[in-house]
Length: 387
Image (cartoon, rainbow, N blue to C red; front, side):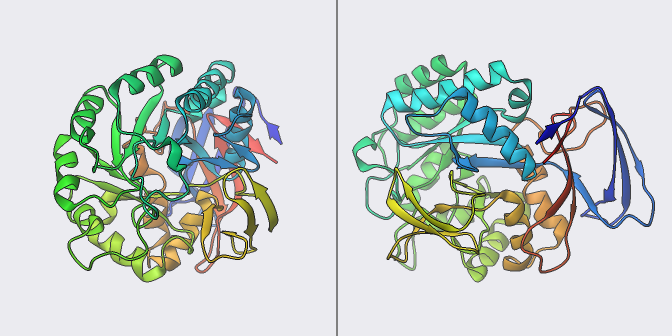
């Protein structure tokens, strides 16, 4: 992989996915200098770099686990950049407090040591440990570490990470959930609802207290739900919640993804990869710390060997953008927006192309039906990154 000097001048050409208009973007000293019209002959597409609010790992590197280091996170930044994701939120899953703190400190140290990671990582998402303890809603989160929301623990996380925790996913069923949500929200931490089977009135109570997101809606749930009421309808119906969706074709079927996005509306929807460390690796059999033997198929399905159950998400956000055009019947412009401008609201504006700001851009090829975005150029944090 080659990372070019940020003082160089870069000129990117491509069509705007939303309008089809040809664009020319000049990048100087790592920042967007000018946006103007490009030649009509341009065939590639040009968009902001992709923004992923939920990355557990990618390319063999994991945000979680006993061996996570600052170097792991720096490497993750580079590998995601090559896949078109120029901004990401490392996601720390349910674990003992010491393990959560280890991961948070690895991200903190990576941002201190590496300017590109400091630009690429605006915050950290802690998914848990305040989730449902029940089989199904809990997913693969370890039952022994599920525990109620604790503001003192959140304070210790922030102290250990220089205040990097920007999002926490919790289940509203905990008696402490509303007070925790109100206090965390007041301190600038966004609360997301996920891995829950809470009753609708508890969902609404946590939203009243300040919750603003639904984590991978439709997943982290029981296999069978009451027709109504249930926690999915409550989240779909509440316009105060923006929902994240995994569009890999495995976590949600096409009809489900389409119906849910239509219910939320595209302005209250966004795409996440929820990728694990095996994402981006060749198909084959692997041994994992959580779950044991897993099989990664050619189509990106990651499953426990000998079972019909998923073992995580194993595709990039670029794959999700392309697949959303088919699964959810979206235009390319709509799908790209779900992975750029929509999540930008939750990471201080990352995901936009604005003169004077740090440059995060991707140039790619795509035609209807393609399973991914075929990347030509990536500019991440003002740096031209190429294999």
